[in-house]
Image (cartoon, rainbow, N blue to C red; front, side):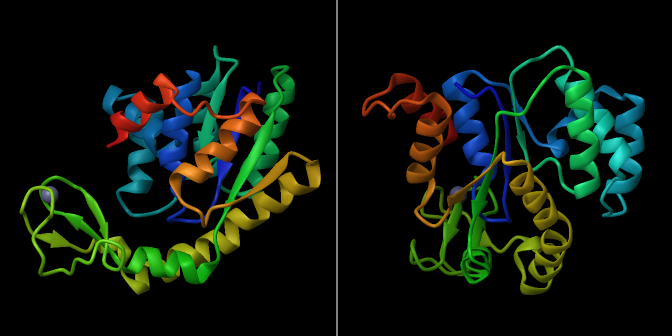
Length: 231
Ligand SMILES: [Zn+2]
């Protein structure tokens, strides 16, 4: 059984969804640094207030702040799933040293890999309901910005960060910062690359098998409950 897991990957691979599914299925706490910081901000902690200064200006917060928040979240646990952290090679190196100091080891780093043209296609054809937040793909679901939401009838809209320009900058950031993290963990032997093209259920099946060492049961109660909770 793998208990200390990192999930890396470009936008639109469904990393967050997989983290939530794995967490619900195996009972392993999962979080992204964004979620940790929102929690800190809500509690009004020093780290939360400091992080807000950066994110309010649309900037990435510095490595040392990200690490501080991650350690606050990890300390006291020996099982965790980190969604999208470490985000830079500097964070990864400091994180590895911190784990060693605590006598913890990562069990695996999964890289959900998706070709850039697929990421672009997925993100630029995504429409979100303005009321119920359901997400649709123009091609798969045969909807347009003029179609009412199939679930609740409200207008659909493109999210501001789903435009070509916003995507270009996210992809540039990904290539500049995240790919070196992927290479770092490839060099340490922890990396496992997962093809993210087959979609949510197939990716989950692969991750389940690799984490637990057993096949995903066809009618697992836990998995069904986890999927329903996401819907
Ligand atoms: Zn809706």
